[in-house]
Image (tube, rainbow, N blue to C red; front, side):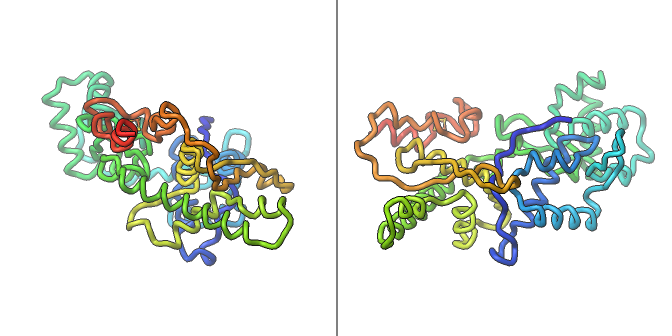
Length: 323
Ligand code: SF4
């Protein structure tokens, strides 16, 4: 069974507590994990992918997905119960489609939510460009498939089944808006996360407790910062920011020399290790070369000249050059 590393830490605050959409976030993550393995995902595999999501939160999300008909509970080869993406394709009406259309549909279906490039479809079905384009157009018009612009290359479209939520590698995740890197949004988040940690550090320094306790109180978990961001209402509709996204921002603050991180070991087996972050006052200004933004850039892999993000259009690179 394919496993990817997902860095959601600790339990999510419950919906009632935050008044936000932590439930829908867990549901979205479960759907993403199930999409990665068409044969189904066991409970223990879910636990590996979501190590620190509270069990009750996870059960609630699974029940909600089952009742909405988005996943099925099936029996695996060794009598293990598996969560499987509901085969909505059964409902796709391919009546009247010829064999070529069915073949193209099957190739696109097998590509899952990462999609498939037209050149690979052509290689798989052996059709010449004109008839293939005609079939793709027809399936698109019938809302059986859709074409998505890949964030890595705005000129490259990938095809996937219409009802699928595109994978992060296609959309770029929360840092992209309509396939464009949202530098302003990332900047605001960066400053807001740092402000939260700074305020926490200042509040801790005023406490009348011993120095070690003061130090401990100045740390915050990614979940706390995530909750703060949710409560501020910074996120516009449709932006679903996860704890792992916040952790990415916090990591960039470490490399900026503004924040430090430690690992807290929780005795509870379920919570395991939790990364904790605190604001710091740097003793010296970091040297110029250490401030180069690319080393900690979350979109480093997608950055090249002519791409959606490039060194020549990057505001962080410009700031660094001016420095
Ligand atoms: S130039 Fe560097 S910092 Fe800017 S987007 Fe590219 S990799 Fe990121």
